[in-house]
Amino acid sequence: MAHSEYWLQTKRLALRQFTPNDYEWLVALYSDAEVMRYGGGVKSPEQVKLVMQERILDYYDANPGFGVWQTVERSTATPVGFHVLNNIQGESIIQIGYFLLKPAWSRGYATEMARALLRYGFEELRLTHIAGMTERDNLASQHVLTKIGLRRNGERAFPHPAYAHAGPMAWFEREAVDWIAEHGSEPSDS
Image (tube, rainbow, N blue to C red; front, side, top):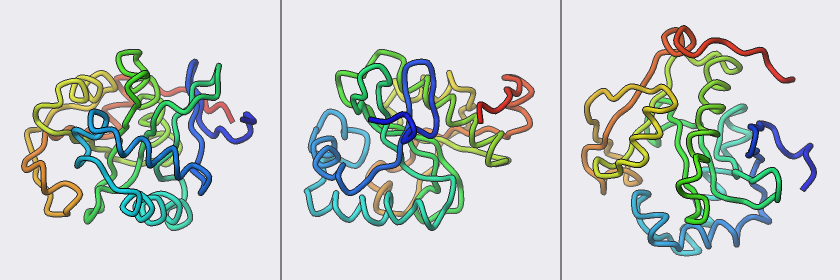
């Protein structure tokens, strides 16, 4: 994969936009019950096609700078999951999130890219507030959200069908001014 396809890079990872050619890979990710345990469960190929079109491909044009991006290991160009910076469905709140394939678990990948994506949201997009949420018993994701600098602020439930199954979810958020004061501002690589 050409480096020009990567729009955000860390030491070990890079993000790139999904294309229609990634459909089969996405079907495989969404069919893994362990990976999707905290993501609303396994999705059928038809459901994945709808998500891919509406929530990923169409979202890029409708919301420049935001989206769902494939997370790739830079050294091998192997897709390891995806990271998101987009609105919570049915809400105007911008969220950060991630799903990783099992071989990428416990390697610090979620934290590494989520931190870079959070910085991008605050510094490049000039967002004033970013949130994160996860099911209450997903302690690993809660740990990641805390490590990247979000703060736990109780629980919230959302009526959209993508989240309603989980009931109240662990809620994390941070204001840009506070996060930047704590983590510093870095010059852009572009």
